[in-house]
Every structure is written in C-alpha cells, then in structure tokens.
Length: 319
Image (cartoon, rainbow, N blue to C red; front, side):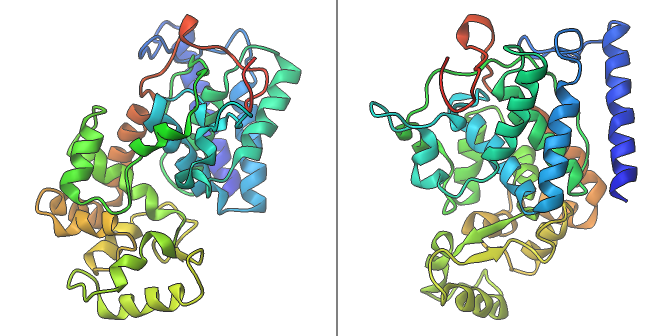
C-alpha cells in the first residue's frame, strides 16, 4: 500500500513540474512551484526519501514533523527559526518549555546534509520543513497538497517569542481570535486542529481537566485519562484510537466527549465550531480537502524572501 502511495505522489510531482514548465506557476508571496526545478531538481525527492525512511522506522515522527511546521510558522513565520540552536548569548525557540517535546529535527538535518552535498547553498531549511510536513501527512494516509517553495531562513529565534503559541487551555473563541490574527478562518482552525488525528498529548497538558467534574468529558474517558496521569506528568495519551493514521477519528472522538485537550473538546462544545466538527466526523473527504487548504495557508505564513533572510548551510546555526 505504501508503494502505491509513493507512485501516486511521484506522479503528482511530475504533474506539478509540467505545470511549471508550461507557465502555470503557483505564486504566493514571492514563492513559486518548481522553484528548485533548475537549481536543485532532486530537492523534493531527497526530502521525501528522508521522511519515508524515518517514518518507516518510527511512524510516530509524522506527528512531530507536522507539529514542527506549526510551531515554526506561528512564531516568526515559516522561516526555520525553530531549528536554530541556543548560543551563550541567546536562548532559542526550541528550548522553550512549549517546544521541548518537539521531534523530527534529525530528519530535517539528514535531508539538508544530502541536499548540501548535491546542490550546496540553494535549498532553505524553511522549505525543507514545509516539504517534510507535507510528505508526513501523506505518508500517514492523509491528503497530498501542493506547496510553493522559495522561503528564506530567518535570523531571529528567541525563547520569549514562543509565548505567542496557542495554549492547550484556550476555548473556541480564544482559538478563533488567535488564529484569526494570522489570517485563518474558523474553518481553518477546526481543520488544522484535525492534525491531532496523529500523535499524543502529555498528562501535564490535560491533567487540570481531571481535578473537578467536567460535564463535557465522557466519564469513562475521564477514568482513562486519570489512569494515564497516574504514571506522571510526562505520560502520553493518544489523541484518538489511530494515533499513527491520518483520518477523521479525532472528530469522532470529540463527538463522544473524548477529546484529550480542553482546546480539542471545546471545538465540539462551542456552537461556533460544532457543525464543522460534525461535518468532518461524517465526511472524511471534506476534512481532507479543507485541511489541504489550511496547510497551504499555514505553509505560506509570513514567509521571508530575498534580503529578509538567508539560505543556511546548517539548519541549526546562522551562516
């Protein structure tokens, strides 16, 4: 089945390159389809191979790559600031408590190293993150979506900027406001939350829901979460029953009052978002379509081009 999926995605890439050749570029904020077609034609294939090899060894890394894109783009824009290591003079984003559980850095490093050997100084780390997240969604069974490339890498990464990341304790109104400030619609908020169809949450992010009776949580599921937290704050709870499969089971869980995070369950509780949750729970194809569109928007968030950034030689440090 994975082989069939790889054939499909490679065919899609051929179609995208043909579009670029015949003059149908996909331009967004200075980005374009086929951006590396002449300067580094193997770039996307190298990223895909790095992602595929890593996820075959550890499927849980798919969630990590998608989360990395979000945590990168939501701060300074999609500029790979999340990849920069701290220095003696600066504590970087990746060392924020909100980012200590991020995973997948080594996948980006592997892809970058091979690309540098093939076409040095051409492909940005920001583009690699965007491509890797896209490929991780598809590898896990989700939709394949096109992205334009040409992002430059940023030169700023500060721990204090991570205060802008949405908290798992926000209600629907707060989520809509926070995402809306970055140009996302209510539909985008719910669709992007569906990325929680992959991965886990740590007890520390949801244990406060267990201290008082919560009528928005199924009583049996509350006992499950309590058992999880009995092993400590770092114990992990899958968001849904298919933690490594990209599907709509997350939205089915919300309908059963079995959302892990407060910011998950609030999407079903709120009349502003409940119809979208019900729609995605009923129609996976609609969820996939809206998720594609929202991820394209996320991947283009406040990108840097030209003199606004650089193409790093090493994703962990400035040139």
